[in-house]
Length: 440
Image (tube, rainbow, N blue to C red; front, side, top):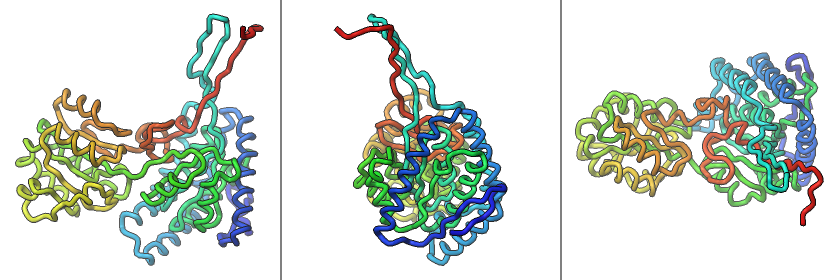
C-alpha cells in the first residue's frame, strides 16, 4: 500500500498487483461484504447528505486534475504501444476540457431531484388499507467496463445519487486513470465522513475478478451492469448469476426519407457518424430513401469522404456513388466504432423498417424527414430504446437527456431501457398502512 493526499485527506491507494487465485477470491468477497455494509449506511443518509458528497467529489476531481491527467498519459502511452485504434484511443483520452466536463457532470448529478423515497403511486382499498409504491435503491451494483475512464466517475456518482454501493471493474487500458479517479472520489467521501466503501474499484485487471463478480460475491451483488464491447457483454449475459442491465452493441442507423431537408440531412448524418466515431451512439449504417438517393446521396457522401469516412454500399448505392467498397451482410451487422459507414438504398419507409427489423441492435435509430406522418410512423414502428427524428444519433447519451451522466444505454425490456441514470438505478417497495384490518 501507499498513501497520497487528496483534498487534504489521506487515502490508501492499492498498488495493482494480480493476487494469487485464492487471495483474489477472498479479496473479492471482502469487497462484496464491505459494499453491502456501505449500502446499509447509505440508507441512513439524507438526500442532502448525498448531494454534499457529490459536490465534494466534483471538487476532489478538479483538485486531483494534474495527477489524473498524468495517470492518463501513462495509460495512453501504453495503449499506443499496443497499437489501439484511433477511435479506442479517443475513448481513453482525457485532457483538461474532458476532465472539467466530468466534474461538471458530477455537479449535474448532484443537482438532480433525489430519486429515492418518491411516492410512485398510492391508493386505498375498499377495506381501508392504504397502499403506496415507493422508490428505493437496488442495493449493491457491480459495473464492468472497458477503456473509458469517465465510466469510473459516471458509475460511482450515479450509484451514490441513487443510494447504491458500487463495485467497479475497469479495463486494463484505463487502469491507472481509473485508479486516480477512484482515489479522488473515495478521498472526498472520507473527508465528508461518508461510507468510503460505497465506491470501490477492483485493484487488479486479472479477468478472474470478473468471474467472481458474475458469481454474485456470495449474494453481495444485486445487479451487474456491463459497459463495453460485444464479447464482454455476451460473457456477462451468459455467465452472470445476478440480474444484468446491459446492451450488446450500438448498431445505430439513420434513415434519410424522401421528404428530408437536404441541409439537415447532410449536417445530421455527418455529425451522427463523424462527431466521435468510437461512441455507441455513432451511426454505423445510413439508409437512403430511393426517391431521394440520386440527388441527396452524393451530397452526403461528399461531406463524409471529405471528413475522412470510408463508405461501403449496396448495389444501388454504388450505382450512384461509383467506386466504393461493396457492402456485405457482415457490414450490416457490424458496429465499426471507426470512420466507416455502410449505406443501403431502401424502398421508402417500408424498406427502412424492414432493414431495421433485421439488423438494428435496438440501441438508437433516427429518421430525417419533414413529413410529420412519416416521422410518427417511424417512431411508432421502430422497436429501439431510443428513436430520433431530425437529430443526430449521437444524442444517445445520459448527459444529453439531462441525467448528468449514464452507466450505459440499456436495450433490454426488463427494468431499465435507454440511458441508465440515477432514477433507473432504483426499484420500489410497497408501504401498506392499516387501521387494524385482518384478512377474512
